[in-house]
Amino acid sequence: MMLKIKTYKLYGAFLLVFLASMSLYSQSATSNGSPYSLYGLGYYNPNSIGLAPSMSQSGLAWNNPYFINDLNPATLSGLYSDIFILDAGVNVSINELSNSGNSKTFLQSNLSHFSLATKLNKKSGVSLSLLPATSVGYSFISEPLAVEGANEEYRNLFIGSGGINELKFSYGYQIGTNINLGITTSYLFGKIEQSRYSATSVSELAIEEDYYYNGVKLGLGGTANISKDLTFGAIVNFPTKVNAKKNIDVYKTTDGISSVVEDENDVGADNFYMPLHVGTGLTYSLKSDFLFNLDFNHKFWDATDQKDNLGTFVDQSIYSLGMQYKNSNPNKYWEYFSFRSSVKYDSGYLMIDDMRMDNFEATMGVGIPLGRNFSSLNISYSRRFTSGAASNSVIQENLNTINIGLSLSDIWYQKLKYK
Image (cartoon, rainbow, N blue to C red; front, side, top):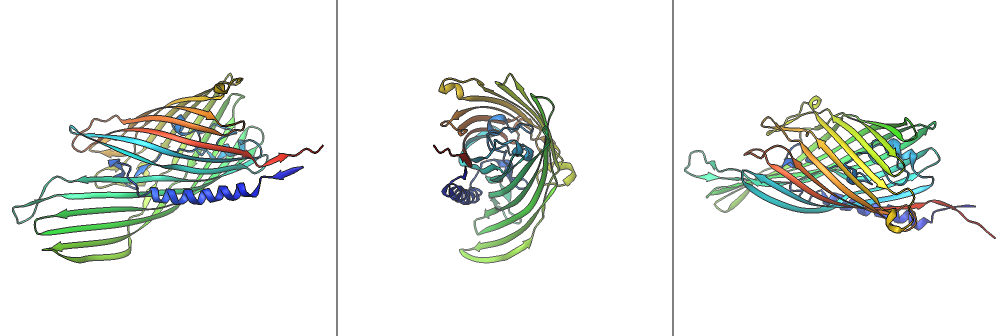
């Protein structure tokens, strides 16, 4: 006899989804400390679902039966039969910035993702994920500027916060014994606040702009088993228009008297265009103990023809290599642990003063099993640094991140025996 998983577990899971959505939306107002979040929609957060953080976001061909692989929807068809997975995580980051001999450090922590996945039947699986796609968090003061017609100087204070969240639904289906296909639909939404404040000895000016964004993104994926130990994977995420509107408020204070210069809502703003993204990858299993991921991703930013006041968006290439060791014949508890390490090079998508903002990242992580099922606690540490030298207009950024992910698994159906 087959019995469905208890109802309270299902209700509890969706309650957690709701709470996670509230947390993620509030997270978008926190500061990430990155000066490059000034550009476009902000800093693009790497995928942190499942084992991706400890593998430098490699795994386009990894059909893992016990974890959510959000990099490629086709892998969902390879989930363990009747499994239900709940995956959530947090990031703790220390961002070290340096510029022309000056340095500053930012500390932040936030919920990195929340995701649910299950196997629908023998050949298909689905997932629902909520994660911050971008984040904005900067604050800086300009160089002194001369007041026209007066022997006086002033500075501008720029502050930005917010970000874009992504609600993603993915579906994977198995065709035959060696080919899996998948589709992903994402709804992008969020708010970015940008403010500029300036003051002289006789007056103050405040310009506050709230930008509201929304859009729909579509992606496809596939995997093919080349041999027993080698799998090929590929994805394509189509270009996306992110619609924008803004509210603007301008206040001026002169001799202690404040007045509203401008107050407008739902003003038209420049839409943002996310590029075509293609990726390919290989996964190789060696003697059941070692697993290797090798991925290449390319984003065609040049085709969007977008420029910022301070920089230009350029085509981006990402190379990542990940490795995992897991004992295939464990006896003792510690032998069930899995160990991971990875490296990644990102050519960057910004060109500032003819200098590309590329970066290099190295990561190591461990998976700690929880109980006798497939649940685990996954902890990773990564260090990412920009390779370009710091200058007056270019800031060198070193980011240290600890990701703590909890993956809880259960079986929706179980056999009951009667004596």
